[in-house]
Image (cartoon, rainbow, N blue to C red; front, side, top):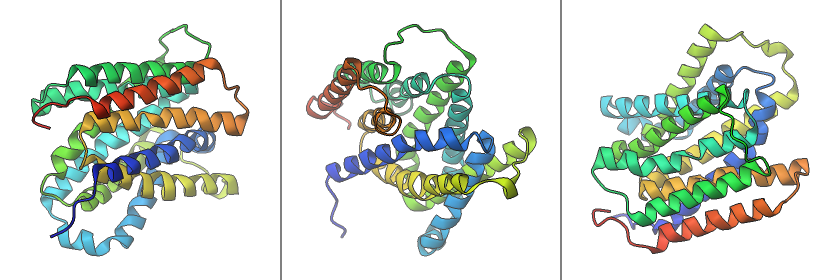
Length: 295
């Protein structure tokens, strides 16, 4: 009988994933200048699926069946739509707005989980989610509190819906299934979606003229932001409640701004500090106050 790892281990996995993804904001911003969004996502996820299929070929061979295929395809479509639409959104909005609006998925998750699993979120979960969004707002928006809804803003909000749906569906599909097999199928599905949509709706990249910088960026997105971080996320989400996972994953925006400060010399303002404090308090509230009895 396998010894169950403590929940802290899975929470640390999610935090590690958010650090990797926080840096990937910088990487994607540069990479999308060389390759259109769907093609970039397709190349990233096809390469990732191929690597994971080789590394975990025994697990894949032992568990792959129609049940795992269905689960992976559904999650793959949701994941791709989230990433693709988010990337499209950032082309017509600022990175701060993109990060802030994407993070609204942590407010959506308790409501979606309530609808699907009949587990009502606690008042503490709702308060923590609101505080978390407020904190991300302080961190991401800086001194600009004007809110003019752009097309890119609307697309980013739509991507948040798909991220929230994906988050809720992972533990549903993980029940009595192998999470690694599902993850490989999910990533492969996302990659095929990207290649298909890119071929149908975007100009084909001139692969021979892409510089070394792009291939290094793609390598980071494949090996770290996908192979490691996405596996961390799926494994951890299968073991901890969605409301807690969503709050921890919201740290992605915080780390994104932190890397912007470190790499681009962005000024560390008092609003950034307030944002970090609000998000920290939100996570503490979600951890120490009562949860629904069914959980």
